Image: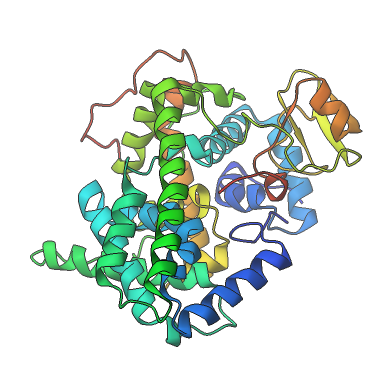
Length: 218
Length: 180
């Protein structure tokens, strides 16, 4: 099985986290930053996946951490602190999105076309690639644009699972959906990204994506 | 069991997650070996997971940590500790956060990326037996679905793989790496 933990933690580190939470609850508030520091990236990334806007994502990440601090007494030790923190962030980000897009229907409920029956549209050969290509800014940009083109229900799952390496179960919990829905959305997200990127990246590295920004091929 | 291309595509994600019955896995592997289209889909999907999973794909805005700390400080009730203790703790945290941000900013401005690839092998037990492909760049735990060239594999000790310039797979070796 693939690694199913959020972040590799030694028992000592876990113990340290429990100790930190206890001490914060007892009044040593300044330790809170130490507690959340390992999850800063993950919290910001979850907010960004939902909001797609950096200043909003940063503000939401800050709000979520403050909320976690205020409600630290409600945190139950049997849960993972990081999952609890991401859950708060997802809720905050969704609330903000709802507020800002009140005129739009919020598609949080499962889509009816989520049977996973996605047919690849392109069979460009895309063999093993050196990860060093990520040092090229234009490649990172292309990948970021493809990710932005995904519908948010797919982007959220993909970001939490494949970019922030939460387990399937943690992703489901954080987003409030079933593990089956996580798996289906993940499959579609991965296949759609492959369709978007393979024609451009599978051949020559310098070629642009074969679609203009904003026009989705599906 | 014979599987169709459509079945392969439907299961490709579970295949990469290693979340399937061994029987189906074997059938899929047999199909993929003979099917050019499914090979392309598998390779591409694996590339997607690998590329986006790299920490270089995601940047936290510069100054994020400092702004977060400031916001927390402004909104938290003072602790019961002495004011001096508070100041010392804050200064230490700011220093740590500052050095983190500094690290990050230099990462993105000079391309000296502190990715998991840039510090290969940190924490991988040297005697652990790992798998490498002759033309590959990474070493894996046996059975990792991110091994590409399954036809030319060798099993060697992790320290030998490192000596030969292979970097640890960020997926199967993740628990040994220094990822944040």
